[in-house]
Image (cartoon, rainbow, N blue to C red; front, side, top):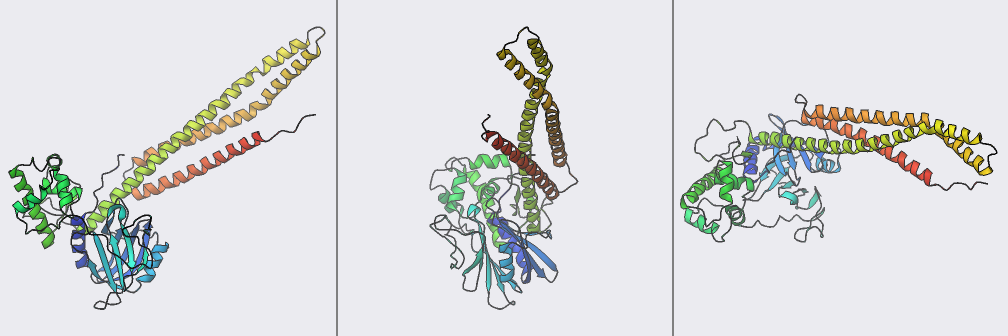
Length: 450
């Protein structure tokens, strides 16, 4: 299974989600929180229509704020979850704030709607610098997803009890619908660079996926155009891109979002046409994105687990085959016992055997006897390694069947792979420890013989 391509949540999709959530969860009462993964929190908010679940993640490769279906109970006992549960107990979510083109969301909570904000849950969606922080009324950090120490960042180190400082301002200009085509084009053409770089360096909020969406609906054309120098783009192409640019800004300003899959990127939350066509997605954008990210992340996790297991099984098979070959070779050597016995008998039948000949004969007898005694033990070891190889083969078949299963969900399959990996780890660790013990026994000094 090839790893699925994942589109990172950018400003446009964040704006679309916040637009929906403001209508659905403001106001709502905080009810529960859990941390199913190291960099992800799930919040349960009680509204008049029922319990709504939000997922807030500061994971480096996939930071997000989305709505999700009711999740399984997992991670409510983590330290961060308990701190947030205690800090937000009996509070109401009354504000979802996001300024300009920054990907920073502030969730304001108060004891009751209309009262001053007492707690602020801040989610910073900034790639590997993403973070989650809980602030008190004085905007002092109560707890946070990850502490940023002085050696990690000289610009903005932050930890518990620090006063919250917003991230540094983004580079570039804020996109504006008031800019004319000429002014917009002049800004992009200030430096003779590729269109991709010009869009992302000159303006805020332009993600790689959005840059593709702004250029063309056809993926091949969009990639080719972004690789052109701004000095090579024709006037007709500039007008085409500016039209889509204006349409994107209009959707942001009027919060007219629609979900579309496909095109130059995995999905898009704005429409470049004035009319909504039948290809638009009718369901909630926030919930659809929640399902999209969960599906892709579970697929990635499943693929990583499968790859790790395949590697472990391959290494284990090589060890067992090598050990089996070694024991089989020793067993083959034991077939010499009869010939050694006969050779010793023949030497003793010689007339007047010397003392050295008698000693040599005794050595042959001992060697033949040793070979005969080792046969049962070697057969037991061979059977042991054969059983292990059968177990490896069964695990490989199980893994292949599990990856080809469509009736079982990705999460369930991942759990079963984790259980299999744990069983294999226990066997491998046991085998490694036994090998080490045998090695230590062989290295112990022998008592001198009299």
